[in-house]
Image (tube, rainbow, N blue to C red; front, side):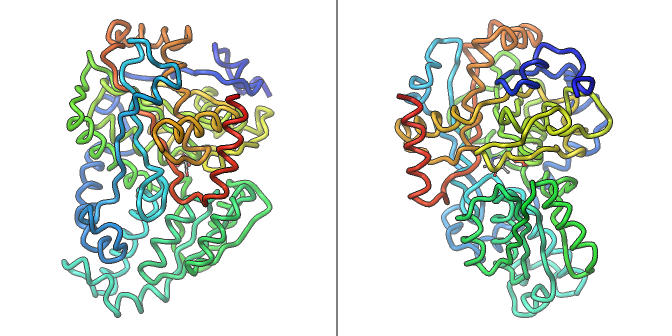
Length: 439
Ligand SMILES: *Cc1c(COP(=O)(O)O)cnc(C)c1O
């Protein structure tokens, strides 16, 4: 099994399921301009324009979006008390922020950015083909459009949150929606979807297998549109528009981002689409001033093992003897997206892994200090600043990038990816576990 992973400082730790930081040897400065990428950076601005075009429609479909004029956005929060509680107080830790996608309306997780975007873009396509849409976007909620959509199905495979986002979006427009859930999916997510009229098929298998079943079922029928988390550009682009939102919020908060004022962003990674899309969008805006890191559970580091292998063929966590067992259901993914891997190859700074116990500790601290409500997956990014500042690998990174002396001026953004919809009872069991571990 070990032959799949070449020699590397993080190799022994990742294979043993110990937390570690891997630095990407293929990182290239100026990657957005100098590399041949599967996707042009201009696609991010296009996605921003499409989101703006969808806004009046989203407002009609989801009344909770009235306050934001149809934008699905989350707060950027300065978290001094949490920064202290995490022992990130020394000046070289710079300033810590949370980008709280757990509070995103419509779906309660980062998936609101990708899933809603793809479903609504699909609706535009169908309506255009049927000749019932030209330029008034709100005709997509006319009775003619609803009738059309009711004859079509949107299907997806999910560990929970993508199903919620796609299912809710599809039902809002009148589509039939089918979600294939992996065995990790939490029952409250299944219940919530069922109540919205989504058909849920539960597989006694992992995420990759659930996606394969969903894909095969969809291919058999022309009226089924499959949101393909392993390959979808639309999902990726939907996520990428979050970058402009963050850039605006950082400017409002008075944070400078340039080569002397680095921006570190820590993104929880499952299959890679959400963190990859956001990282791509950020690179398009900030170039080498932004340092994007993915984070994964120690037993599900699919992006780490694959990108570390340098292989053309996808390497899964099972291939190297890991279990893919984690409480972080949003990240319980054994094999990453090949598409995302190819886009990230020259622009991802690195990946680190965290233990489940730490997720609960951080979840508890985030609630106790800043009243930020998270699900376990969403807390993973809090391991980032410690890896960067307190480990030899992290210091080596800062030296290599020439920012060793700029750390005090840095902004660290922990992207928290889900949580608002977690039922109270479930949340308190998370809290109890976090408290007992923090002892
Ligand atoms: C889906 C999800 C992720 C990871 O996104 P991928 O696109 O699978 O990489 C992280 N956190 C939460 C809460 C999620 O739902």
